[in-house]
Image (cartoon, rainbow, N blue to C red; front, side, top):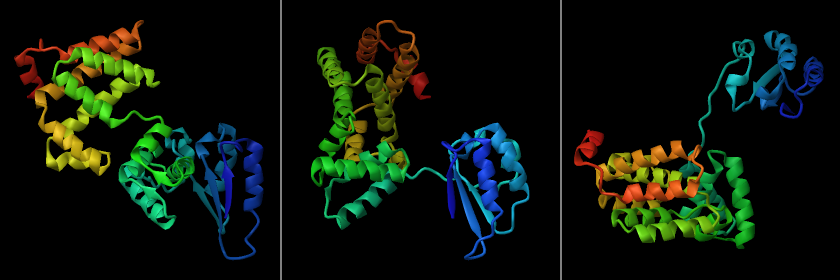
Length: 283
């Protein structure tokens, strides 16, 4: 089995060297597998040089082309391949796998902490293992939710739960102070507000037991969502999502982004949304 990293070996000469290797029959076994990783990084000339070999490969050769951007591969190449699409690994599956490793290595790890690592890895188990290894080194074998979000620079879910409560209470002064506290921690306005939009979406999903499985969070956080979702009406959440969606559009062109953020929070606290508008949004 041979592997070629197309990201750093993407020239015609690199492909010609590979073709020369392909011609040599295996000394052990009957097959030789050639894995070309990040194949979409090959130049157009390299693809064309590879096409003839792909059309009429030696009987002993098997080519495995790996990519995350299939649309960048030439149609003439794709038409000669058998395509297998792999889904991203879910955060829950990654957390379970890391939990097994933690037990084998005698590492104390909270389930919510492992779930955060799974989210940060974005479906990549190799990335999750790398993050897990680094965090274990930093924390001395004690992985807690608090030290994971601190080391990964992730805003605590509690800030979103607290923000929602303050919006519901129309407590604008405390809300602006909380925003200032979050910004002083180094988090940008857009990151916080997009996170708040995701939080409102999660609250909406939590209103029905059948859709709880759509929440990509740990069990303890999921219980908090279930509790807070009961305290907020459907019209409140939908109206909030509409306001936050408009904020996301306006943010790129705004010259005073902090002011836009504060005005948006004021709008979320405002009671001036008509009941008819709320009803039309729900319907």
